[in-house]
Length: 309
Image (cartoon, rainbow, N blue to C red):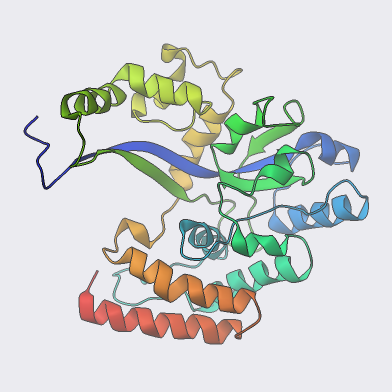
């Protein structure tokens, strides 16, 4: 157990996640739609219709919780769908306050102002906001792929036979037809563990085929810990008919992107103390969108020039 010492734990890469588009197929059929929307405008139109017809309370329920990943994930999604980027290509300047960033945050605020999403979105995490979708009270859910396993669980879901999954709609007139946020997690052993040997054996197991297959089964085929399990799913017992998330997940990995967490060592500082406070001020109407983003960009740029990446 030389990898475990009193001063350092052990960390290895673990699961891979993607933001996935879930929709209530039965509700869409009741409204006269035979397939999922291709564009964001179509999705918003369906949301308005569902609310007006009394079939839904809201169109969807994102998590914008401050000081957490949720708001960053949702803004990253909208920023990239509007053809924007967090930084320029050589990562010397923050660019999230450009035209694409303003368009992205403006659209997020419009969703609030129009009542398409609840004000509670500002106080909810993406682990706590899917209850309306699971109870059949919203037509859409844009969230991590773990929602799938909840949606097919009879103890948590009332829409087991009503929902389907697909790709996040694109913004009409923009370059991307779709986009997803890539995420993931890792397995770690605390340096203070009292069971070093068993902890290591568990971590070792999770990075072998049996552990990876177990995670895939638990998450409906989408929280892969080994590339081979989703590149060759049938070899491991994951038939496409039974595990619909596998094909969606595999395709998403081809066009997904990441937040600044992928390359910024002071990402938590940027997220918690610079960007999400500005985003919340704008969404609450306490500050103009352009002003809030410009202020956050200026603070982030000063830190970038002082600290580097």
